[in-house]
Length: 258
Ligand SMILES: C[S@@+](CC[C@H](N)C(=O)[O-])C[C@H]1O[C@@H](n2cnc3c(N)ncnc32)[C@H](O)[C@@H]1O
Image 1 (tube, rainbow, N blue to C red):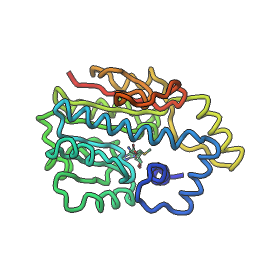
Image 2 (image 1 turned 135 degrees about the vertical axis):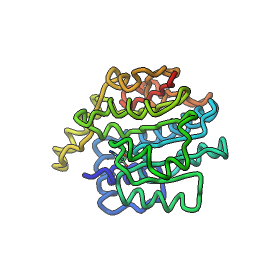
Image 3 (image 1 turned 90 degrees about the vertical axis):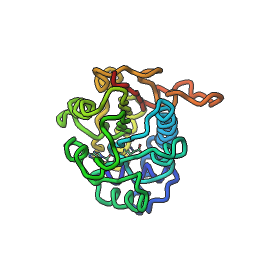
Image 4 (image 1 turned 180 degrees about the vertical axis):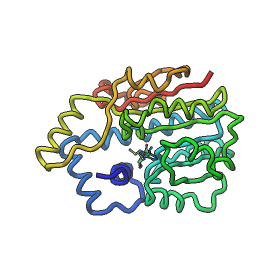
């Protein structure tokens, strides 16, 4: 299974407009059979992203670097940020050519947004890209977002060193958001079940517990409420709360560079 399929299936669950292939929809159906809670988690994560972007705007952030952006779908960073602050600028990054091509279509004609087709494991390719330099002023605070993209990166790719390398390029008052799938009984049994039922090779996801996720924020100040299930990250007042949100295993944190 390729990264593009993961992103397209997420888009399907989010009700996005991207064209899903039959293979994508078959895969989505298989996941729904073995792990019916996953579409709920994907939607909860997208809702959290909206809240996080609005929070960042409220803290004065107007520049966003979204690493591993996925398929352009509903509630994109630029839509939320610009809804809150029209002068916001966003650079999206994904290494999948098809995803990036659709992303470019989505933002075509918008000179405050760019979609790069780049592998974010090489920070210089992202940070020194002409589009990045045009849109992002690194002398001012930036929000760096890794939303469920480091879950696809093995430790051998040194995701911790990577986050640190990006953080080093940012000025004081910048933020780094990282969401990460943790190992849960539900997820482990879903992976085992999908192998038994569909003979599927296990997807290349790299689950990390909360302690390991905390290492991404080394040298940063964790914003309240710390690393929490995505459903519980600054929920809107009056939202119906998921009382066992940690069982879903999708956690997020936001760090501020002092
Ligand atoms: C699970 S999707 C998440 C998409 C989006 N952030 C969201 O929250 O809906 C992860 C995305 O990260 C991209 N990705 C993974 N590794 C990458 C890398 N090394 N460089 C650029 N993109 C990468 C994949 O292609 C995929 O589209």
